Image (cartoon, rainbow, N blue to C red; front, side, top):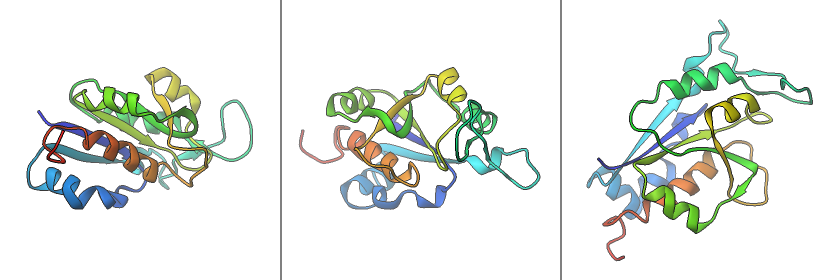
Length: 163
């Protein structure tokens, strides 16, 4: 079974983006060395208007992705248990050592936040690891997810040709 990157996002149209080109794209589309699945978080809103956000449970400014919506989106992902990553500026810095660990798994599931982030209750309850790709705040987690996925995929034997 190839390495599978599953991305939970409000913007599935952002993918594959740069993951679909060059040797990494060829390894995905033509050689089947890895696969990419996107899950549209919006599809899991029960609000008639499709709202995904709410005020933070502990208070504070802004809005966060609702815990129940994220939980339903995550529950829709089937297959073996994989590392759960949440792309966050406050997360643990990305390192090559972590990438090597993830690349040896069956795949990764990456949650891309928006607004002020994601309701902390679902992150804690589901065991997400918060990961930061740098000391900067982005508008969402999609670009950061692509960084993590590319870093993992390039380590899959045969993707780049040489070890």
